[in-house]
Image 1 (cartoon, helix red, strand yellow):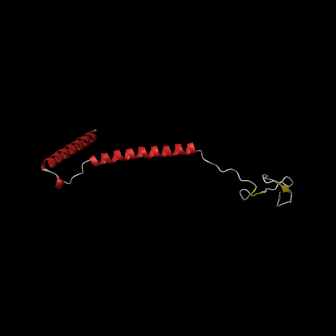
Image 2 (cartoon, helix red, strand yellow):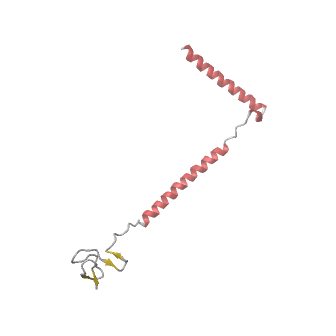
Image 3 (cartoon, one colour):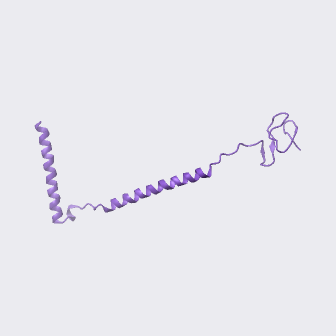
Length: 113
């Protein structure tokens, strides 16, 4: 038989409160006074679903990363004018003239209005 620390009333081992004064009682099973609220426990299925969802998201991100790196690796490196062949240089100069002509035509149309 155990005794209440506040009033001295006897109590059995499973009691949580004194029947005389209502004081929380010492519990020898888990070495605490009174009882503790049960701790929140996450459901194992919920944790498994969460892990699978995160793994799926990482998998999708990996696929996009791989595709992006493949696209960037296939792009040709830009060359300086010194590294261009004559054919490439002529094509570039023609393209540049076309761009300048387009800019001139669009600017002359705007100024004439």
